[in-house]
Image (tube, rainbow, N blue to C red; front, side):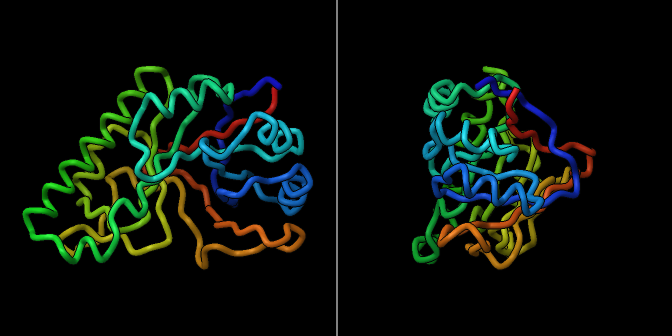
Length: 218
């Protein structure tokens, strides 16, 4: 199957899941009017992608938290046949556990933030150098300030369902805003999709009128 990158319309609802979806589930999601399904490149296979796109359900791509190696991401994109120009969302949720954070000194926290920014930027530049669009999902406990978020080597921002506070306790938001917002509650089931758990995601434009892209057949 040939894959094509397509801009995602604003003001639409989709879902994401780490679960493997059979074509019948993709058909059910599409029939319910969902505009996309987000999946993780380490879990997806070409057969699953073909089954999803063949049922008219566009695909959004994520990569796992703590996976900061651009070479690994690029290898997976190549194995899946993903064309250049596609955006990939780095999920940095849970890069630190609450109990670990509580045990840190202020100096430890500053070191953690510096290391996190460096890893994100190296990943982002690695993808950009190969004509992919690095993007990011903030799920909580990243501790970055609004200014630090805004300076990262990424192009689009995806907001998680948790309260996003920086290490000083202030609400953090990138200057360009979020083009995607995760819904609440999270980890829900959908009628007709068995026990599979999903998160809902609302897609809109960011403050620069930019949007995410999805993969479609063709």
